[in-house]
Length: 183
Length: 200
Image (cartoon, rainbow over all chains, first blue to last red; front, top):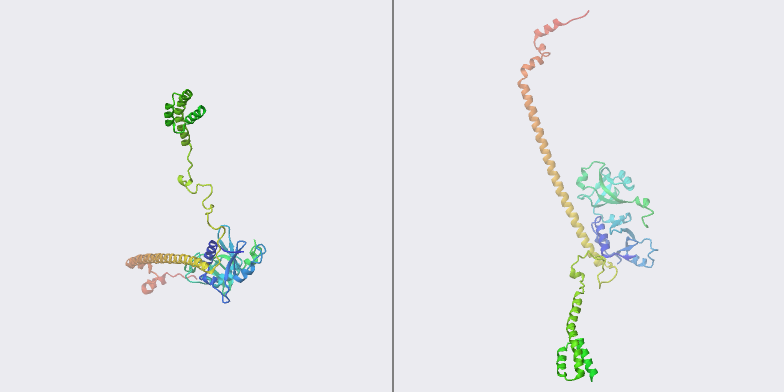
């Protein structure tokens, strides 16, 4: 386990910035004087309290399976891939949001894209190909994706037209159970 | 004494660079026998002196022939055309290993840079989207206008055709209004009654 280098930090932040409106809240000091830091272990980036990270130094690298919140994985090509485990962090400060109706929640959780017929609400002025978090109508975050059309275009779309391309959904906790935390 | 002199000659033969002075010496000691012999030898040594003058020249030539070794910078070879690629060669004098970013200040500076970049990208995307939307609206309005014009033209032509029909209507109407005419005229009604056929 080690802190991120400058290059790695830039990559991680730029990916998070596509989904979040305010990044400063991520590293802001907490009330108890503690703060959150980013740690890398087995190519996975963890978002963890500094006190917990310091305690985790007593565990050897191989023995350390996970700590804090796993945000995603740094690929060998130098990119950062967000995991569904990062959803609580993204949902808190999401820039663009899409709310899906009751009939659209299940198809989304089974891994399909969000279609126009399932969209209940959507953030105004959302450009195409920008990161958005998908919620149920009861404001429960279900996953996140990338918008296929801007809000204006999506209004004119036919009911079967795709509004948001899925990136991750909560169904992955079951579907990718074996590979989500290791491998 | 003689051996010492011969030694001197040997020095001369070697071409120590003071041959001129040696010659002067030989000239002064020409009366001595041993020395004369030595002179003969010195005469012999004259040839070597001439050859001695040539020898260093050859050596110099040989030395000059030695190829000069050029450095990569002098040749001006492109940097990529090297055994070790540019990226792989590590700069000297720099600390080995990775530089971690863990303090809040440096992290917040990186964050600010990244966020500014992203904001700019999103802003440009929004502006582009708005411009595209405006263009689409304009096109739509133009299309509607054209459609309206075409419709009006069609209506006009329709009206003109109708008017033409009305102008020519009275002549045509006599034949058309045959069934209604009998109701108006009593003579025709009678005629119709006469034409009726009843079967028993």
